[in-house]
Image (cartoon, rainbow, N blue to C red):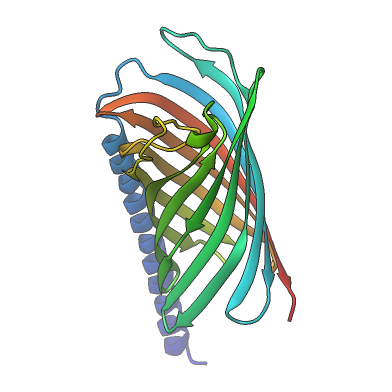
Length: 277
């Protein structure tokens, strides 16, 4: 290689490094603006809201049946370790929520697009000092992702159908129906071969109320805009089949335009893929 060829190669390498650095700075700026904007949307009407600190975790086991079908089993729980209520001064809850999902997932990938359709049974358990309530739910989750280079944009809609809730005293009220729609928009950027930056926003809307049972956050949900969650964190591939995803979640609960609760979560998901074919 001649001196001029080496100089040209070095110049190209520097230009590539500068371009990569500019892209990283641009991506970081975009992500920071997205987070700030999503938080700003969540805060109007904050007032005298309760504030909590919580831990939330899932164990996601995906069993691949073939190239398009899988079965997902996912237990989880949530633990409240800090609470500041004004004026109620409620005690810290400790473990206050158990979850369990199970069901099939259909996947179809075409070029830059991936479509997934999970249909899951979802058990929700609500322990307390004096009682234990639970509900049975069916979730349908169409997911569409578009990948461009290192960045993936995902839209996911959850149709959360509650069909039974034990919180009601009258047995005839426990069987019913309510529908909540959760619309998640997510940006994911691969920092390197193992690490992915994740940012998402997910509002919750009650769409159908039960005709007989009164609305309840641990039963049949009320209609209207009720929750918003902002997710920011990482997904790290420990092995090709095993991943861990620690995230911060900023959650606001809403009631007729007023924020009633602000919840801060450390959200950790452990994922493992089991190939059965």
